[in-house]
Length: 369
Ligand code: GMT
Image (cartoon, rainbow, N blue to C red; front, side, top):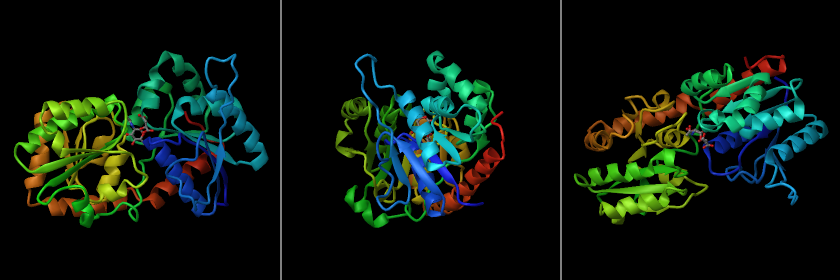
């Protein structure tokens, strides 16, 4: 394929959709494509030396409006810059409001690709305030993709589109085992259990603390909660109530989660909704088996060779699964399997090729339906 001029639209913050978009943009640019990343801030995961060009989306303030008009500002900058830069296609990540903004900017006569990530379909996508314009925009696009088969099914029901399933990628040269770092986070003889997220209610961080308290009754362990968000206070309160606060470390978001993940013994994910689970994939690549709730697309990622799945809300089963793995003589083998599986099945080169196939389909006049 000849080098393309690609406009990528993403949220720049700590969310998984922004990480996926930024890493894809970086990889495509390193392959020789010209990639322009549109966001309200420079994405925190975009390396300084990246060949990707960051295009700021300004949010002009006018007192007549009740708030900044992000959708309209994005549409304006996309329309203007696409002409100036001669973009071949625009690829948005997270449909709300990115799909509608791109539709406003280009209508149907431009190659638009939209990647659905999760709550843009299940929560915000179902909100009557956003559903109509989002459905219209997705339906008119040349292609949509979804990060799991579970999410693709949900999107088909919600919006009538047929997304191509492309799982997320992980870079095995960045996420790899770092057992020598474990002593930085856990005392001698303690197992190190890690969770990383934006601590939103759907992540059920307090449930992780409750399950951890059960684990602590049987083995020496430390829980490291990496991230920040609305449930941090509740997670601290539960840790105090259960008397395990001394063994729970709250660690602020870092641009280098690989340094912590690589040191862990297990990764824990107790979400009530999860279309994929990017942090769990990063843990696997770091050689860290995962215990997770069997929701959304998580079963597409966590197989018995690399972790355990439990029913949502069954904290007894969650703690038992953690203990079973910690006490299993198979744990070193699971670690190796996790690493090999993530590095092979979710390698960025493989995933980037799949996106390029979707681009080719969009450029050839394809349809999202
Ligand atoms: O959909 C969201 O809740 C936000 C989004 C994000 O930006 O973090 O998360 C989703 O996209 C990630 C990247 O594809 C997935 O790894 C997460 O599983 C997914 N979150 C949910 O489905 C709750």
